[in-house]
Image (cartoon, helix red, strand yellow):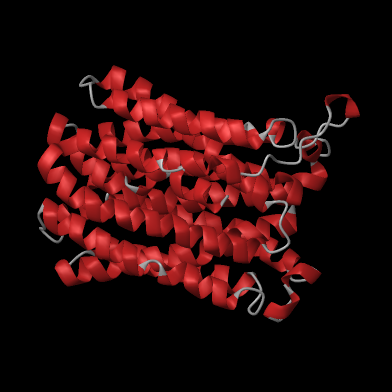
Length: 382
């Protein structure tokens, strides 16, 4: 099931390289490239939120197979298109397939007793797949350009199909049961306010970091004066080092609680964004900053998911929807900031969104401290 999180958002994971490919092939502005990413990730958000309805109604296995086929076909179709409208349509369709796969993983996560540990494993698998994609894309981008990257995504997604029989069928409930699983969580608005605040916090967190992540290339070009190959190689190595994040969160799971890892990671990320905005760095500074950003992001992500399970288990399946709203908006917001005020403008906008995240998440961290689930425990008790 963790493979669903690796393959589902693969186009998002490869977004910096895809942005470079789009700019090289079509000579589009940062804002236009960001808009294309927003369209695809907006579709991912809509599809993942639909999990509130089908997570306990439909069989997960055929749904995963269908979603994977949609991603494969859409990416192959994208290689034959050159206009913005046509490319936007097929990227929207690919986003729908990706959203289903991501929602399937979170439906599984909400049913586990160790969401922080499962989240760490899934994050590690996701980043490992991303690293493999980057090392291949550095060569593919120079040889076949943007079309080669879309074919790579299709090939990696196809690797899921032979293992489909091991995907859980899910806790399907009879239609005559009279229950409305998934939607039950939305019945009492006041009781769901903490959960809704958690979803909003996830959206701001991912909008800030995705916006910067999508334009690593612009930061490398505009401030460090690097070439495309240098930037791609730096991102590939930084992403590999980013595996230290989920390793750390796995080792600390149930030992440090959820609050402190989230808070400390957020402060560290804000410091990185300030340094990116101030500029004055060369290759080594660029590499160091994006590496720190990715490590802290990957470290805090599993704790954020686990915190959501504690605050409102019923709304956990909506987490990918909230995150992809942020993912969809982040590149456009930061892209417009870069277009208007350079890369510093984009970084300051991202910092503002991280401040809002911190304001939203601190009360939830305080609430979670009284939960038995967040108390420290030995691995044997897992």
